[in-house]
Amino acid sequence: VMFNHFALGIGLGTILFLIGYAIDYTLWRKLAPFVFVLALVATALVFVPGLGFEHGGGRRWLDLGFATAQPSEPLKLAAIMAAAAYFARFKDRMESWQSVAILGALAIGPITLLALQPDFGTLGIVLISIGAVFVAAGAQLRYILSIIVAAICILGLLSLTPKYAYLYERIDTFFNPESQSALHEGYQIRQSLIAVGSGGMWGRGYGQGVQKFTYLPEPMGDSIFAVVAEEFGYFGGGALIVLFLLLGIKGLNIAARAPDLFGGLLAVGISVYLVGEAFINIAAMLGLMPLTGIPLTFISQGGSAMLVALASAGILLNISSRAVRKSKAYA
Image (tube, rainbow, N blue to C red):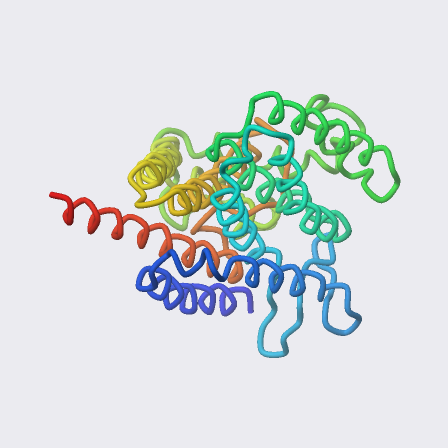
């Protein structure tokens, strides 16, 4: 069933990739508010009895009958579109406190809905992505630092409540791997490190990994990087990291060459989302940060994530193509 959902995500994602590449990205500036509201409504539907259901410790999924969907995935792209549109529109206010008010207005919806599910991994990606747009739009450093401090304090307070106690356990596991909570929360990280280490320099070979059989949780999902490293070694895992680095560099280059401010901000947000998500996933699998539960971009098995990632890549390439056309027009 999971493979069917993954295949459906690739199929529909390829179609959306082509659509995103074909449509002039400036259209998304006009549609951004509507797309954002629609994504928020879809994300809220997970709380409707009989429609939304719980999986993996959070109520994040919709049962559509023929397939399941995770509406928080398109919310990532929708939030980036909205942030790019509003910060491009109010660019003259980026040096005042009003820029923080705009960011807060954009963030309050995703923060509320994703915290209630709870899905702090996705929430982190949304906030990092729109935060990158905020910075690229020219936000003042004092506002950026204030927001970061406030976010850390809020997260710390939430981790002390019963509903979000697992946050404390994950953080405690990261800093104290031998603690009692690590016996449960640290299992995935230990198995991931065993997989990565057993792969050696060149790996066991394609399909020859053993950790994915019963030992490693979510081997085709969140833990797919550990499987890649075990089967293709440090070389394969390192090559994958380099590819994501190149994607990030290319994305920021597209942003720098974008025909207008909206295109540049949209390219920054999409690039940070695609690459940031990948690096956070990889860092968690290597024990460099607490587990987040977010997928490895373009690789983890998950139809909703694949669909949105491919659609985002299509839009990014459209911005690039428009930049090339503009440069030729002035040549």
